[in-house]
Image 1 (tube, rainbow, N blue to C red):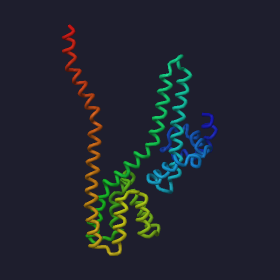
Image 2: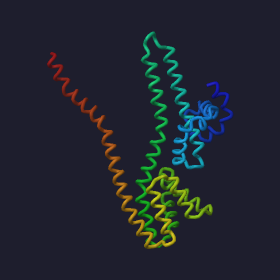
Image 3: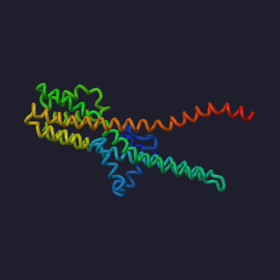
Image 4: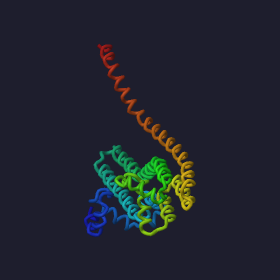
Length: 277
């Protein structure tokens, strides 16, 4: 806490800029100071490198280092709070009873591990979201190209139709970034290549490769190539939807067991009381 107070001025601007992404801004100066002081990037590359790679996927290469730092600070914050609670449990423990301290240590490990796995969950959800929207986007491209629109114009129209939800849709957010890059005088090939790398999904790479291979030819040949790709994308969407449905149904098993136990108790309890009587 003393470190948090002393370092508050040094990290004030950073914390105010990224407050919505920081866990417990009160402790953030302490956590950020510890991340910088220990030089976690250099000392623990095997831990930090995977985090940084996932941040590139989630936040882009421009902001990846900043959000890697924020995530490491979040882990430090969680670990510090858990360590303080564990220490307090050890201090207040009665002679020979170490149940509470052991439980605190166990929870510390679980919470720190959960913070490490949080990025995996976010990356997985992002990829699933892109895969679910990609077939519809491909169909829009086919319709617009068949109507005489250029590929660049078709992509731009699709983005403009979804401009109000680009921050909720990873696919259209990345497409919007690609369109912004084109407006900055980048070539179409560079914009598509960058878009494919940011998405980090094989299906998007296949789509961008198909578009770039037929970009100059355009027209009917591009539409036919996209139609073949669209069929495989819809099949993958159906498979993903089926898997998500199975996961949702499996999550309902435990609540159903509890409900069944409660109903069984309500039915059996009167019979048990009558038997005891």
